[in-house]
Figure 1 (cartoon, rainbow, N blue to C red):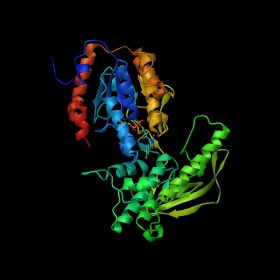
Figure 2: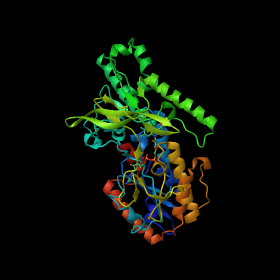
Figure 3: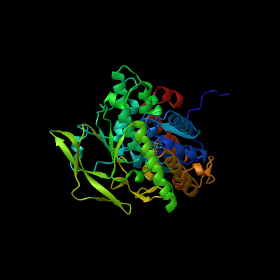
Figure 4: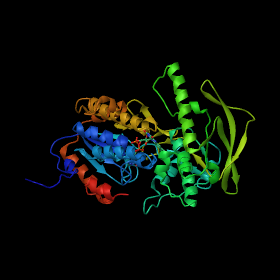
Length: 452
Ligand SMILES: Cc1cc2nc3c(=O)[nH]c(=O)nc-3n(C[C@H](O)[C@H](O)[C@H](O)COP(=O)(O)OP(=O)(O)OC[C@H]3O[C@@H](n4cnc5c(N)ncnc54)[C@H](O)[C@@H]3O)c2cc1C
């Protein structure tokens, strides 16, 4: 009996029968979910991931105090990427290391699923703001990346010093994490200055007032001003709790629930909130951003209106913009404004690129794990069963867990004819070359244990 461990690449390099081969761009929540679904339907999924590790926003976005959630999501991504029929290709950026068009072209794949997420910060909509990046202005994505990784030995990413009196422009879920990070860092530092070393995850879980109390300290005694969040609507409008098509009664309850969520954040992390204020202008001092001018707003019939003549100045040593993330441009993908140009938002079909579908955060725009996963399964399921005619249109996971967009995209991708064995073997050799460039051997567990 041959006792060699099976190498995932054998599926391609030793191909004897036609099979659908799906290229998946991005190996995190959505990409890994779609890849596993493709493999379970009998297709081969080749997952291109730009990073060494495949965890995407779970590792670099979700703040590190979500210890259990991160572990659970890592485990699920690992399980998906080691599903029989899934071939993981790390450190390979589509659009750079490999051209997007070559996946369906030279490499002859059946379909491509774009699960590349939303990695570009939406620019602060104020004239001239961009010239102050890292000169008083910081964007959310690199800031949270820094927070999640700076404690690691050998960390060599962006570095930030958190300043007391920082202001954050935002209002969504991610901006709540950003204000928490700022105050957790400020209080950790203030406590350390008094010889009290406290772990930030512990500080997040217990909340700042409780920890101060346990050390017999008052907020005033520490003298930390802390962070202030500026939001252009009211706290009851914050997308901190949502529901599909709520009735007016549910809507009213949602507003109360959102207000309560924000009140709790303010109490537990000593965060200040200024509602109904939109940034309109930078305050510059030399080559540094010294603050922002805001205008008061009012929300009428759900629409934000500026109140004329209500401008006020806020000076701050650090401004963090946390107003949303959009897909990073990828060579070969048409854009409409700041988004990819989708011909159909249900299937995720990309305009002008037949056989290419978006799924997960890149399509939904919702910064939410459940939505990314659900969408991924929906699109993938559809691409597989409807268009490629592979398998029954149902994944092993309960349908509710398989996002409709993922099912749709997989179904649609699978409609193209299967790839002949000889072409699969050629494709296998191309993937082997990419593995060699990355230094990957196919041993996923060993790679993850060593990769940083
Ligand atoms: C601060 C913050 C807090 C959050 N908190 C929560 C929370 O509490 N609960 C919740 O449910 N969700 C939360 N989210 C959102 C959640 O983490 C994301 O919505 C979800 O993980 C997105 O999954 P995805 O697979 O669609 O995208 P990503 O995780 O963004 O995955 C995309 C993958 O594609 C790869 N990639 C990108 N471009 C290329 C390319 N050209 N070639 C190859 N690979 C590429 C990336 O490296 C990445 O691994 C939070 C996000 C942030 C930023």
